[in-house]
Length: 302
Image 1 (tube, rainbow, N blue to C red):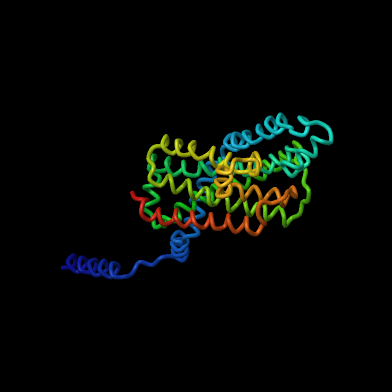
Image 2 (image 1 turned 90 degrees about the horizontal axis):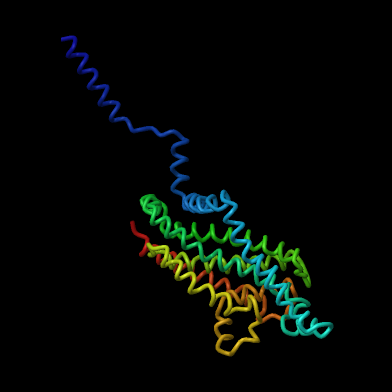
């Protein structure tokens, strides 16, 4: 009899315990709210890609060394002023490039050069994440698909701006001379570079959304890098190009970012006003980021 009463008491205690709602601590509640925040998810994905970059300095070195070679070798060997010689050479350089020396002209161009090639590799991380299964794990979390795309884009943009700043410092050491240097001009120049890198990174991430083969992505990158570079004013002025190539250069967003930097830092005659350059780059960035987000809703599947 006594045992049956004890058993009944245990059953009642078990039922009462089961009926009581589970109490979560304040820390657990706040943690869950933060984990579901879109900003938290965006920062986590962005920081993950950045961490792979800044913990391996060799990647930064290899990215910077190419534009440095262009500045040190191409910029010095194609010294157009010395080719003509004397005062006539200086005047020739100023008439063609709008600056006293070609090194300054090329120095600003190398800032957009590094933006192009860094942005291209933003899509490769999507391919590798899909191949090694990390993308499937992210897709099983509450993180929005658009956040996944923007995480890749923002990590690429941050790398682009840091590397462009390093290239600018190296270009000054190698002979770049500012016509006028102000905080506002420098800020507007990097705003243009920000918009360019944002648009290009969105474009290459968008291309990589359905790619499962890294060789295909590399082929696309190799197909687009030369048109983006040479069908622009990065290395040579647009006015010296054939008419058909000038049309392509005036559509190319790289032209507008380079034009903005040269007119603000070197005082060259602009192709367009600074306001128009920034507006064009803003439209380019908004368009491709919006298309990338929409495509992620349809193409990012487990």
